[in-house]
Length: 194
Image (tube, rainbow, N blue to C red; front, side, top):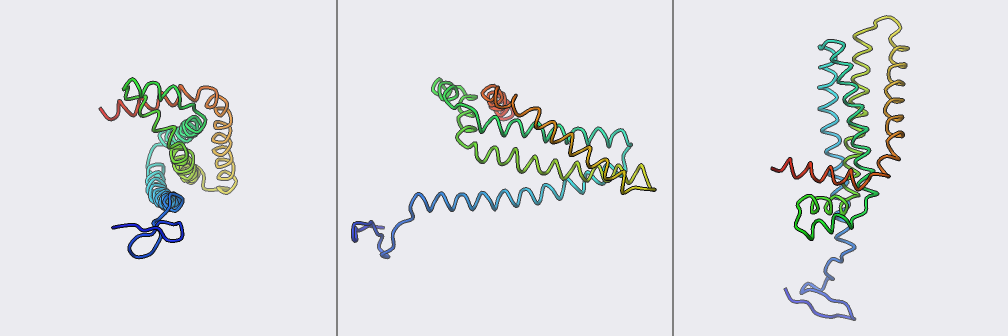
């Protein structure tokens, strides 16, 4: 396909201008939003149903432990998402120049910080929030039959307080130790690939 200059602009054989980098970025952004929406919807639905079934049929101790696990998971991924968004790329570029795999992964994480933090903070974090809500409702339904509304309100408020409080407590840690956290994640990704 040949290009010609018309009025100072490049055109292809059909007379249309080729797509610019701005258009390609916009398409990529729209594609990412669709992928994030789809992933969130599917994973959230599956986890909510599974968690509701498990907590309804499991021992109350197991249900509470699962609930605490998902609260901790949401906090952990919030820390990772914030650390990736605030990390300095230069130590990872230095490692990548020495052909260290963790350095290359670190560069990739920081270069794609918008998508990585979106996955960690939005997708995983919100899914953990939905799952803990479903688990809390199932625990209340299992424990209490009379006055369940008040117990449900108390449990969901406690779950929200633990989640938000945990994330707030870890934010300064994530920002202060962002490079170390990204390095840990990059090394974990290398280990996982092995």
